[in-house]
Image 1 (cartoon, rainbow over the protein chains, first blue to last red):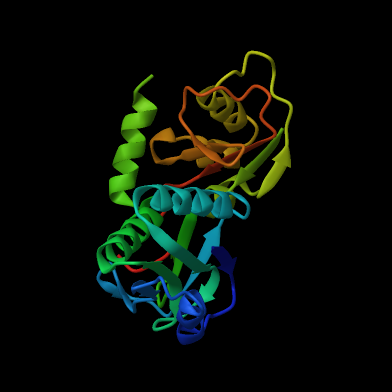
Image 2 (image 1 turned 45 degrees about the vertical axis):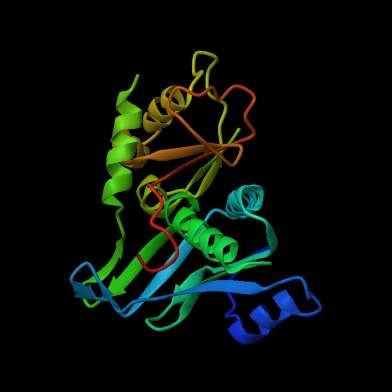
Length: 150
Length: 86
């Protein structure tokens, strides 16, 4: 299940709903991403997460399907927020349930790693020096190589 | 086709979304980017360095050499910077 939203989420309620009435589930793994105050050596007051509506959901659904193909999962939940967020606030919840812990752990890590590099989100960080778009150096290099391969 | 710009590309291009009709010799993502760059100084700044630009054609990631013929929506944006802490 994929949800992209501006609103916060209730971790306890979300995880509870994933396992309610599912006696076959033996394990639930989850990851919660938070806005960190320190970024690139500086301190931020807030960040704004921009995304590509439509494509974001499409790409997240694709990676959910990929995880389900690789591991025997019962449920997959990704809630990703967008808009203005302050340090300490929740950005993302990723949770997986399975009969056994290994599949749940591995799939959850796979989903979070994928989110980081493939989901179309961009961070605009605000600090005392003003606002700046966060650059992805490694991704820049990959992109550079792709664009040069012509 | 509809062209979308995100993050700093939108700031530089000065437009978030526009409807364009590129000439027939614009066949690939890279050719479309070059053609769009000629539309204004802001576009040129946004799309001037393709090494830091990524693209999606109809909401799927696309390569510079991928075709744009028949596409309904093409988006240009910076490399994604993730939505959660590193």
